[in-house]
Amino acid sequence: MPAAPRRRRLYLVRHGHVSYFDADGRPLHPVHVALSPQGVSQVESLAAALNDVRVDRVVCSDLERARQTAQILAERMAPKLVPEPNPGLREIRAGRLREIVAEQREARLAYAYDHAADDNADFIGGERFADFERRILDALEALLADPDWDSALVVSHDAVNRVLLCWAAGVGRHAMVAFEQDMACLNIIDVDWADARVVRRLIRTVNFTAYDAVKARASLTVMEQVFRAYRSDDK
Image (cartoon, rainbow, N blue to C red; front, side):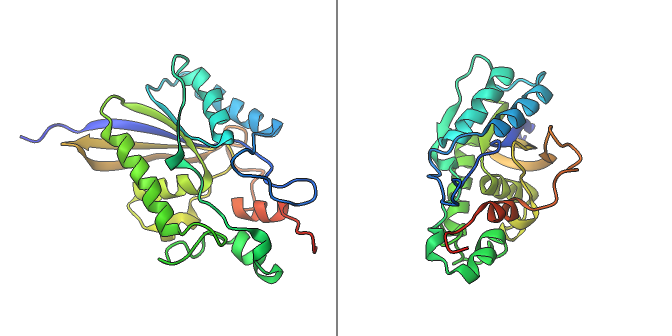
């Protein structure tokens, strides 16, 4: 007789606000960029909303902005746990913006997810979407294969969360463009697990932001905001 499914929960969070460019519009190194004061405030708002939630695993990307976000949340949700950095959950790697001709920068940056389903498409001249998707799903499979948790906080990045939401919805990469992921947002995914495999996926919450729950201040997409923040030297 098949085993009864075990329901496990993922609290999937994007890191808080950061500045990806300096005052002159030059990109900052993505490995070291840290939360801004606004980003810290956003994450603290989410932590307050999750005050009564407890998890038994905390995993995060090893990039600084994700590690900081995970630490703030873990202090409320799992005060005895140390966040586990996982390089497999790093954000999709972009290429060099200066190598993209000025006339194409808006299309490549502001609408970067539009062609994610194409097998040879890359993210702004960097990592191929197909390779990125495989990397993220490998990290998820490894996490689910560990039986020693029922609820986990996973703190990562915009494109990472989009891939995981596409997986949860049972759709392909073409749907990445539809899953907006605002700064310090929360997604909740339940996974029914039986006989060492996933038998059901349930999406409970998508892109909840405690600091702006009804999106009154959100009109631009995430990538449109990034493009607006970017100012090349020849502008």
